Length: 83
Image (cartoon, rainbow, N blue to C red; front, side, top):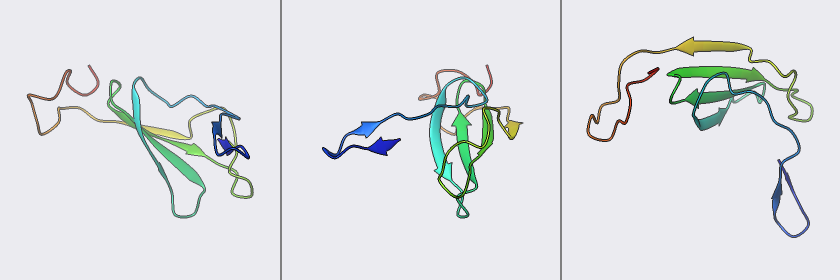
């Protein structure tokens, strides 16, 4: 994303998230990885970034970890993780 002179966000690139239903993102302290939580897939994926400018290092997920189970609030959970 970039920010225009008017303060609006503009998408400048995209990358696969490594699973269905991406819901959360977190940037590693080193700015080398973007971590993505994929709700429907029940996965957390890491995507390598170029530290110099924050662009995607490639169009591939670096690593993906699959989880099984469900969230702590059964009334709020629509589907079990990974279903």
